[in-house]
Amino acid sequence: MENGKNPAAATTMEKIVSLAKRRGFVFQSSEIYGGLNSCWDYGPLGVELKNNVKRAWWKAVIQERDDMVGLDASILMHPRVWEASGHLEGFTDPLVDCKNCKQRFRADHLTTKTCPECGGELTEPRNFNLMFKTYMGPVEEQAAVVYLRPETAQGIFVNFPNVLTTTRKKLPFGVGQIGKSFRNEITPGNFTFRTREFEQMEIEYFVKPGTDEEIHARWITERLNWYKQLGINPDRLRVRPHEPDELAHYAKACSDIEYYFPMGWSELEGIANRTDFDLKQHAKYSGERLEYFDQETNEHYVPYVIEPSAGADRATLAFLIDAYHEEPDKDETRVVLRFHPALAPIKVAVLPLSRKDELTGVAKEIAQELRRHWMTEYDDAKSIGRRYRRQDEIGTPYCVTVDFDSLNDKAVTVRDRDTMEQVRIPIAELVPFLREKLG
Ligand code: ATP
Image (cartoon, rainbow, N blue to C red; front, side):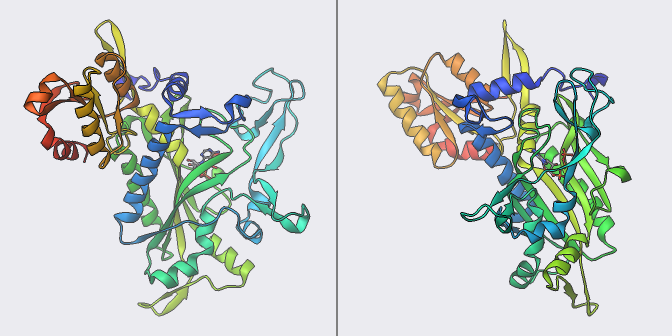
């Protein structure tokens, strides 16, 4: 922690929510109807940022590894899946009601025995299942009940034999997946941190029993490094092993990667040792053999599973908060999002110094060329200073300014978001120059 102080203290959630709305990162869902509690829409910049987060994850855990493959399973699954996984029975949170103000809380999130809002008396906790239920087909009857998946993991477990036979992977190997999950959370909140519909980025990594603890430790380090490499301040990251009484029903061990959000240390990603629980349960409920044949030892066994499970929305929020900086700039304050170039929604902005045709024509041509390589914005409205400010505020790493000299020297000025330094670059060398800078 810098000087023992919370470095994120100045970055309040209000500032982030306000910037997110003002610049088009995140809007409230169905806003014109008054919004829908805890549901959010990613705007033009937000969808770029979140896509970049997901792309960076996919590249690191699938593309760059020989021991990983991807999957995209459906959200609706056979209802027996949730019997086998234990979700139907046990995916519950303890719910308490305030007898006075009628508000509801998660008992395990309360630090007092009375209502945190009004001090009123609370009911005894009762278990509330977090799965969303719906009906398949036109008849709303018990036989047609299906659930929106509360985690993407089960889609991977039930496909274990398919992936094994089609890819001929040898242990240890893993399957990664990005997709929506749904949980009817009792107390959603803190912007996109806890919502009822969210996206997960999950890995199920299958290992030989006995090697699980070592591989678990390795994944914790790898996943922590992923956040650091993408620019998150390491002082705001920590690993917190679960206490035995916190562990999920299937887990032998679990460590959370936590980020110092404005509301305090909170989970970004959980990395669990799920043992052979899920594959054995699905074998039992489906009657299929979900085993691995080890050619070296000539034996059949059920692999253990290490599960690094991250939230795409939570990671996106953490990258947004971490990038947020306010710094003095003459008499004003410069707000700048210092995104890693791989995450920045817009990589380059092209700004003609004036709206005269001779400049805008050249600038538009340059922008069109850059668009073939990167998300590029063209902006000719208002003063150049205000346009730089706007690009700083949305985290654009480079601004390309076209001025009257450009018409003669066939060069442009490139401004760096972080240092605000400007260099003159021939137009013909712009693409290789930016490619080197943006990586
Ligand atoms: P919590 O204790 O915060 O409810 P969890 O331990 O139940 O979370 P997991 O089941 O481990 O969460 O889910 C894996 C990841 O999915 C979490 O680390 C988080 O990033 C994301 N996630 C889980 N629930 C939500 C939610 N309601 N909204 C947004 N992201 C979520």
